[in-house]
Image (cartoon, rainbow, N blue to C red; front, side, top):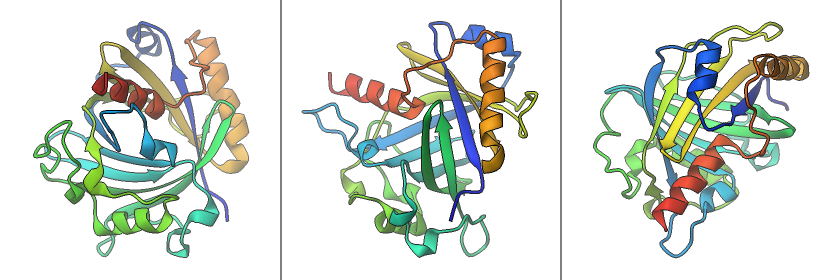
Length: 246
């Protein structure tokens, strides 16, 4: 068993995100809202779910569409139930997408297993920011996936929704030597945290060459790479939770 694709990411650092956006010629883009859900307490600024490899994310992609995702990262094949060993596309019986892929960021290489549900109603708009998580944002199959495959128990009734992140997904562009289109996504968490991530997808046997091509492109464009080794999800959650408990 092995993933059939690798998502390769580079996060751009620097105080002025507009500069790499201009240098890459990125214009327009689709405005999204990204909301993460965490086990937050007033007494401690911790990312309890993220620390056990559980990411609960809800996105609004323009009224009324959006999606909800339960992601296990880092994950192991051995923690996945046999029901969830293979990728599945949405269909009439199961509208959720199950995706297992390798996740590369610099020298960090992990396995990620996620289940995403697309929806076309205003369910996100009815949930107050910073309030308790509404389990209706996730399907029964997603919750079964979480309870069966997570490395720790999660009671959604005790999970909070963090403040929304303003995101922009730009149109794909091409990079020489990269087999797929490159994506650029900006996260404007607040005035204190704003960054851009570039990502590509490659087959496992071409991932090393694709990662080298992406790195060479970023260096050629003289874009500032964030070498902290901290994912954009970790950066955003640490920042938001620290503010909420300060």
